[in-house]
Length: 381
Image 1 (cartoon, rainbow, N blue to C red):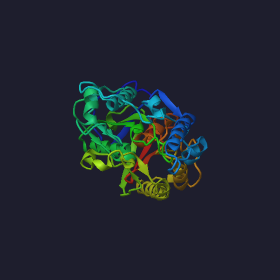
Image 2 (cartoon, one colour; image 1 turned 45 degrees about the vertical axis):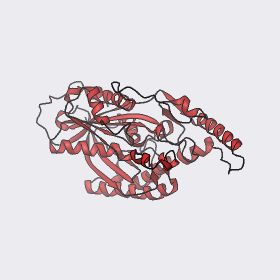
Image 3 (cartoon, rainbow, N blue to C red; image 1 turned 30 degrees about the horizontal axis):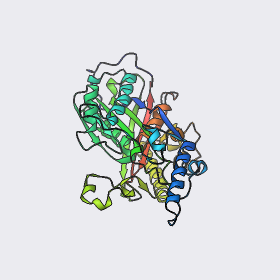
Image 4 (tube, rainbow, N blue to C red; image 1 turned 135 degrees about the vertical axis):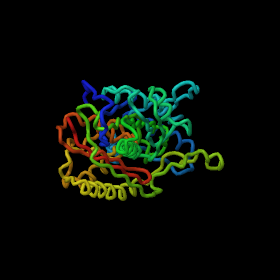
């Protein structure tokens, strides 16, 4: 979105109509290509097999396997060298003192500052901060409150975790505050250091995740910059499933026999997820479009969750009634990997400015839970 030349007075009479005023994005400077990742993984496999000659040998990975399975070609990370070290194979992010900003808050603040700048908004104009992400760095104090403090925002903040759908759930929550008149301006911040929960030694998933932070500024239409996105409607859905799971938590220490086991990192049954989530999400989109009086085939653009190229292709086809072009359903998965809740927001952030006033689109996320969220929007200005 373009910077606003003149922000309407924050004393304007509120409408109770929520809009997206701006978005922000922080991208880590380091990136790992599939070629680099495969070389590291295969070196680990060779070492493991040599050290365990009587065990079932581990299989090599390959660039072809990764790109066919996911569509991912690279991913940004906060800590590249340790991930690629066959003896470490996880990020190394040293602990910081309590009087220093935490790493997740730091990247969240970077994304939030960009969103505020693009909307022509000052921190003191914002009423609330929601930190909506798939993992939190600690239990408390809340990441949102730390981000709020770093930005100089009064009001309130809290954390929310709905895994891959955290950002869209956060947008609906922010929109509800605006609709009710309890807030004029709400920041939804999604810092995702998903490299920390990925098992880089698991062939079936070692290529999936990347790191990033996004921010979405949701405001009352009365105070929004001239160019913004009207939120036409939101819909959330959850269905319990064990097919995507992470059992890491504070009670792990109460069962020490399970500490360090693979289920304390990200695990999934990928084929089951694909089979169950695609029809659920496609039907959810179609039903919600009907409720809003929107022809799904007329949606100008779909900013879908960036987890798997095949899933996005099938969902878009069911919604639009034809195979979507790159223009209709843009992809950032190839260079960012799966960034959990941030994926659809990255796609929206990078691929919305060229659309015309009146164009309608859909921000949609889906993943662990299962959880799914839809945000139908129309461009204004």
